[in-house]
Length: 338
Image (cartoon, rainbow, N blue to C red; front, side):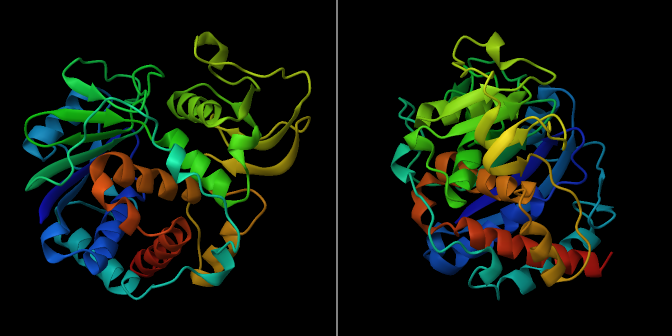
């Protein structure tokens, strides 16, 4: 059994649903793996940090000098309230054995053989007794530039790292924003490998990872402007934007969409916001034409497990729709105690 210390670092992070996801996936694996292969989440933490050194420091000491309140509970991790409410969540999600029917797609594409990319990194084939796992968000994704960290999945080339693993001796790094985005597109029926066109607004870490992965799989990308320009990177091979059409459109800068871009498939929200109501209300909110950011978060979390944290458990992870269903159940429980 592996004892796992999990943290999400960046600023802001108080709104994040990642602490829920790490516990839900560990719970799911505990139901399907032999006892000796299970994962015990010893600690979950939110690290409000603007510098990568502070995030890495947490990995060594496993605590933060300035704990912040989690928006979903109004208390910091490590306190009784959060431990008690997380247990309430797990007592509820353990009963969700199948995805909610409204969120399940009968036909979905699967390109597992293409992800992650081929690389020379030799990841451990089993978990260590103690592990430290980190997710990074803004503004830390581009800050990690150290030869002491083993680069995986082209994260240094695109200057974007959002997942780390530490075994007590060394760090591995990767980026799963792009892989997660492709998983979501596939789930909703887009065949990326056939040359599907993705329209991107923005050029930050998530945008770079998504554009890079989409191109590597075989799709085309149109950069429709934003705060940063994807054309500044030599690896980016953008399609002509004179024809303002695409199969999928995402804005990584905010929630707005230009009216002059025609989208044949769907638009994706790069962010997620609180949803009020019971399970039915939350499911309805996720069934709108625009794909909710929760799908991206859940897919990226699954990619963190399958690519870096526990690749030996890849086939035992919950499906994307099941994880999103469990997440909705968890949010409903937490909201009932707010």
